[in-house]
Amino acid sequence: MTARRAAIVVDGRVISAVEGVTLAAALVGERHWTLGRNPVDGALRGPFCGMGVCFECEVTVDGRAGVRACLTRIHPGMRVDTAAPAEGSDGG
Image (cartoon, rainbow, N blue to C red; front, side, top):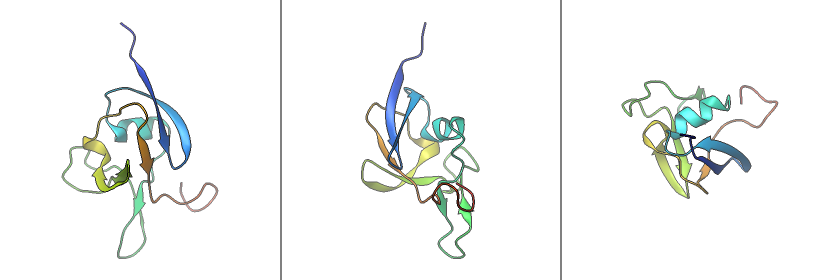
């Protein structure tokens, strides 16, 4: 059985991911580790616990902020915005 692929948009870039896997897994699979910044000191944030406890992987999905990527399953057409630094800067 072949896994179904879903096209999603992450920070304006289209990627292909396995439908039904978590968004965090799909992003890490694309080497997209930085998902946000610490609101206090601006340090880079990314997936940490992988089970919804730490809130380090919060992103905006389809316009809804504060979505935990480790608990969110991929669906076709999903639009994801991270607070990752721009490519070529300090860690994206």
